[in-house]
Image 1 (cartoon, one colour):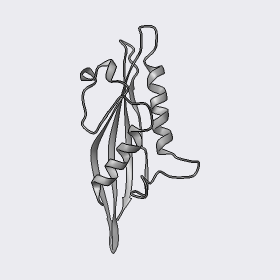
Image 2 (image 1 turned 90 degrees about the vertical axis):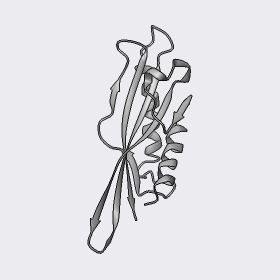
Image 3 (image 1 turned 90 degrees about the horizontal axis):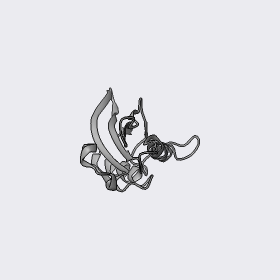
Image 4 (image 1 turned 180 degrees about the vertical axis):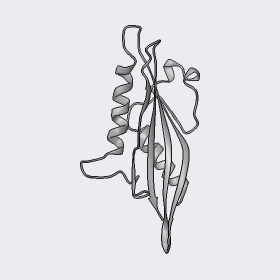
Length: 140
């Protein structure tokens, strides 16, 4: 597995999926990302697992967390109404067409949202946060 092109392709795909003001592979806490810098997307490498089988090349499964920050434009707007379209855009980017899989330009077998999306829709303020788990399957 050649890691950097895979992670770079995922970052390029997701950071271009919606009108993110800030996008980085270096995580910042939401309290350090002001409303003018949002919506924001941060990609964090989490883990990699190799599956070895006798006589066959390794299958790699890489796990990534995608942090999405969105701030409500005013005190009357629910932050979830800003966050939800961003999550929809990420989901759409990872599922390019019915029956098709996201291969990151042929670098991976498949990349997809894997598991529970953690959200805080900002019920106590204007800040919304989501953590989207993404898995990438790569066969050497």
